[in-house]
Length: 391
Image 1 (tube, rainbow, N blue to C red):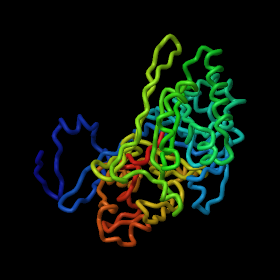
Image 2: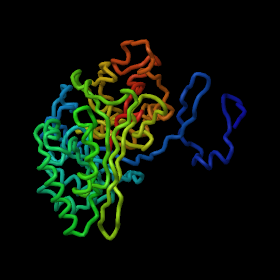
Image 3: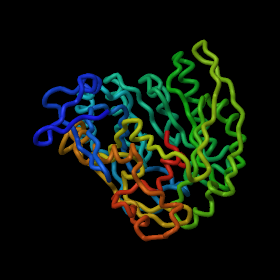
Image 4: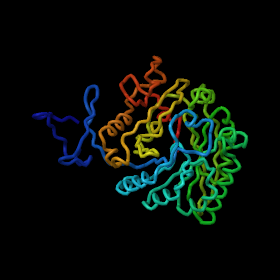
């Protein structure tokens, strides 16, 4: 569509545009400059998912954990911070779901059940990512509060493999906890929570993938999410499987589950194994925000802490990137801020170079910047290529 520029830079939008985009006199538009033009963008308060990190503490010491490469302190979210989030969620009618996770074990927080119950009173879906070690005694409460989904990390199906990777846990203990949860669902005639398993694929456990279907079936899990390894140390770089001749991961068979009078077919979701093709940020596309344990608001998991990792053997230092803090301003103001709006537009267009296959080997990528002036940069984001997946 073409419009004519009038006196003093004014122009008029056709009525069909103002109606379609709910524009009226006094509406705010963000003008985003491009190389040969600009974009007029109408920001909307349309947050759909809120990721909350109840704690950065954990009771395990898994070999691939980010905790092996960061210098940050570990701490629980203060209840005053959580209550500030809760008050703001009440005013955000667009929010549909809350995911409790981050880089700690949610059930390690001393008030996690209070958090869950408070969120459920708002009528929101609740998903929890967990290592599964603390579920047993909480099974009845989790079912009673109608938690919608639990995603449990299991990086091995045989005890020796599992225990070698997930230091401090035992496969027997996690499976026993899942069986107690399954029994609590049966007693309460509940289909909730839906159980999913998450598996980090690496060289030492890749043969376990064919065994995942049976583990999922026996524990009542209806989904298995497989993600590739994000190595945080030089040693773990030897464990990656992606971009290694383009070989696909082994396939597991589907499995049937019955419950609530329904027959369900379980499925495994696998990551991509090569760099390239389309780049999509599922946090931005899903209209999600991530809130750290201290109330800091980040656009995604990848930018919520400062740490190092390796991208195809190249060291990368990530600096935490926050756009505000819920203790200082509310979520709707943060979401509609010019910086956050510009960031989401840039990521939506994926206006970044492709650092992995550039060939120049500059030092900008190591600092999570790029030659187009972006800081932070998403130029070599493995999540955007669906090589790394999140629940």
